[in-house]
Image (cartoon, rainbow, N blue to C red):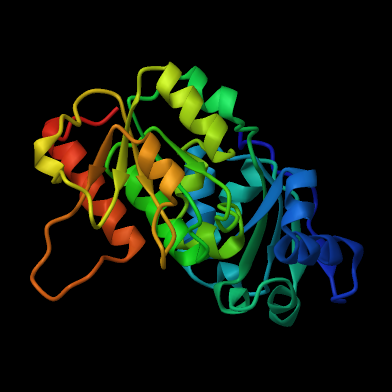
Length: 277
């Protein structure tokens, strides 16, 4: 006997439909995402990642023709069997929600788990990233993706960061938000909680006195990275246990913030024998 399918599909033929307006507001307004604890993820790959991770997909807008190939048919079947409400909508309607989503043929509304500072620290992470002032959602999403790939167990977005659950950050992270605990916190509270938990504060600093190989990243550590332009502010640098510079060729002043985070995360993974939790 086949497994039960989800609720019947609805057809949406107007960009002014109430559900479409709600999705559009979630795309455009961080406060609306925070209130609803819901964010947008679009594209076939992200849909596959969300379902594989068991993320709670509240609704999916699907363009006609998604099932024209085997990949699309399998995705649609998975959505149905997961009980996800599916609404058929023209590609122009998907585009009215998120630019670029029409060609991919699917936009999902995904529930965001509660991840405050207390819940992030409750799992006693031994490696995490704290980003301060990273304003570009593509950079922040790439940091999240790399953190997940190199064994970090959580990411804290401190003040001044783009929304880690904005659709551009979610797309850049390629679904890492579905499995990596990500939360927002203010810097003072985050640093105090990390220090109380015995986590070493390792700050990326182009003028730092230490190189990554000179410090012990096998112990619990938080890698701190700062804004694309000015880096970490002085109070965070002064609070750090280690201020780490990444060796570079002469004539190069600094690295992109994602590249700096990736270099430090890779060194932590190397020291830990590439043994991932």
